[in-house]
Image 1: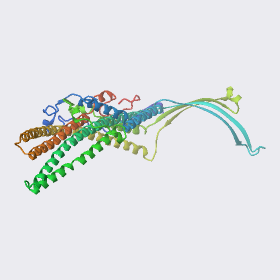
Image 2: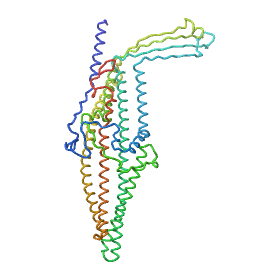
Image 3: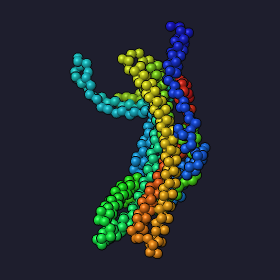
Image 4: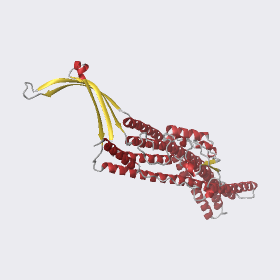
Length: 495
C-alpha cells in the first residue's frame, strides 16, 4: 500500500468517525412561557398579600426574611447536622475523587516500577544427569505506556463523568434547599398548631361553661332538656378537637428533631406564631431566569450533557487507538549480573488496535447511550415543565391564601366585636350569660380559622421561595452551553 493510499485511508476513517460522533440527537430548547400560570392576574404585580416583585432574584438564605432569629438558628443547625445532607456531601466528595482517578487513568501516561527477586526450580533437558536445577532471578524495571485518544473516546468519557459530578453537586444543593424548606414548614406548622391548641382550649372552656349553664337551667325547668343535651354534645365535640391537634403537634416536632439531626425526644419547643413575620415584598424571577436557579433543572441539564458525552464516547470507542509503551531495567541470575552492563533490559513498542468484530456489542452500546441521551433530554424537558408548574401552583395558592386570610380576618374582627359587645352588656345585666358565652365560642372558632389562614400564607410563601431556586447557583455553574451541541473529535474536549 502506497503512502498516499495509507493517508487517504486514515483520513476517511477520521471523517467517518467525525460523522458518527456528530450523530448524537439534539434536544430542543425548552419553551419559555410569558407567565407562570394560566391566570395572569395571580402573577407578580397583582396586588396580592404579600407583595410579589417580578424580575428580582430571591436571597440565598431566604428563611431570614421571616425576621425570626430562632428560626434562623434552627435552619443553620439542620444544615450542619442533618444526616442525609452529610451523606450527600460525602457522596459528592467520592464522585469528585472518582473523576480525578478516571482522568488520571485516561489523560496521563502510566509509569510503573517493578522489583522482582525469586528462586526457581526448573526442568532441564532429559539427556542431562540432573532432571531439574535451581536458579535465582533478580530484576528491576520501569515501564511507561500512553494511549493516544485520537477520536476523543477518553476525553468524552471524562467529560461525561464530570457532568455526572455536576449533576450530583446540584442534587446536593437540591437536598440542602429541601431540608431548609422542610424545617421552615415544620416550624410554621408547629407554631400554628400550638396557637390552634391554645385557641381551641379557649373554645372548649366557653362551650363547657355554656353546657354547664344550660344544664343548670334545664334542671330548674327554665330550659328544655333537648337544648341542654345539645349543648352537652357541642361540648363533647369541641373537646374532641384537642387530641388530634396535640398528636399532630407531636408528630411535627418529631419531624423537626430528625431534620435537626436530633432524637425525637429532643425536639425543639414550638415558636410563637407571632414571631414569624410574613416576608414582604417577595421577589419572583421571570420564567426565563428560573432555569438558571432551580437545582433540579440544573441537575437534569447536567445529566443530559453527561448522556450526550457518553454517547459520543461509545461511538469513538469503535475507531482505532494507538498505545506506545517503553520499559527499561536491569536483570540477571545473580546480583553481580544485575549491576553489570550485561544486565540491561529494555523494550519499546507501538500497538494500534481497531475493533473489528465484537458480536455487535459496540454498535449496541452506542445505540444504548444514544437512547439514554434521548431519555435524559426528555427528562430535562419534563423537569423544566414541572418547575414552571411548581411556581405557578404556588402563586395560585398564595393568591387564594390572600383572599382566605382577608375573609378570616374580617370574620374574626366581626366575631370579636360581637363578643366584646355581649360581654359588656352581660356585665351591665342586659344580656344573658349563655348569650355572651355563645359569642365567645363564635370568636374562638373564627380565631382558629384565622390562625390556619395565617399559617397557610406563611407556609406557601416558603414554598414559593423553595420553588424559585437560589440566585448564587448561576455563579457556581461550569461555563458550558445550555444545551448539548454536536460532539467534536477535538483532543481538548471542546464541543
